[in-house]
Length: 457
Image (tube, rainbow, N blue to C red; front, side):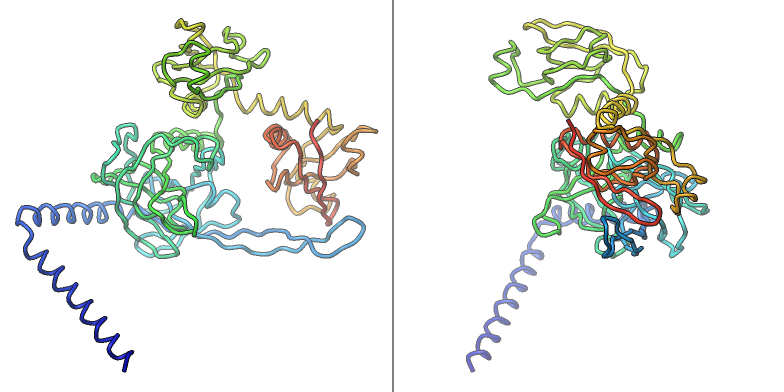
């Protein structure tokens, strides 16, 4: 009886709420209702315009997992992993933008179009540092989306997200731009995110964030969540950054970034007072690498960089983004504050890739390792199924590498759980690991593999 009364009461409450809601709508001023309907029609127009250019991406990856073995060498077995994400067409030639974390390590990529076509896609290039990847499909009758000028996006502006959250294709959500220039989120090395409260969930990654003109202002990339679902805090890579990365990936399959050669930090009130800076702006130079572009330009520790060319620098993240997008060899002005006075220096931007390769090569030598490229012929002789990794050619006696049991003829296939393709890739991963102080290497000998830990000096 009690349960029955509870159900009746619940029904009355729900019905009453519906009546009150209906009454409030009926009582709404005509102008307000017309405005709401007009906005709804705008969202519908964006969905109709952009929807055909949004794709669902399905990926497969084959991973080698160690099985039980003996003697420190582990036989491995291949297992298939599946994943999904989103993307969008950018031209009639079949190029598609998405996230690196969606397709960057996939062995098979398929694209599901709005009209039901499922096609195999080729990965033209992937940039983990910005989390942007470029695909290509040999398809006709495509609906490319236009990339907007993301610098013109305003906080508070309406935006629309389209993608495949939880496998639900062509899902449309709306919200506003909550913030711009988020560069300390910890998702990628180069961050300048647009923050939005439009619902973004797993599977939305790689899909477009659109303005009300149906133009792409960003690539939906990540969410801040404690439960894995949307909490109203999502992040999108700005279209201008994505465009720059896409152009390099399309031209060469990789991204070459600018390099200055400084260690920088953000300003604090105490540091600003100590270095005679009136505002908490710019990036404080705490160290200048010898023989670097910064050193050659006359930059010294204690300088505060406030602008690169015509672009103002608000913090270290902004400096990293501006310099990273400059082509190596470019000459530009640095505006710095030194001793409370403004000074202009001219710098020739270097290559970050080259600098990291040189740094990693020197660190590998100190560990006692010399490496050589692994070509198809060598891979076949060693029993490897692909020319992936770097061949150990020499191990110096009494070195850290020798103490860890590494031997000439073995192949290093991953560093800190990242697969490597070539010697330079190994050196770059070694350079990137300097903050952690150790390397977790996966080493293959014939058809067996094992893990080795090396500690960086």
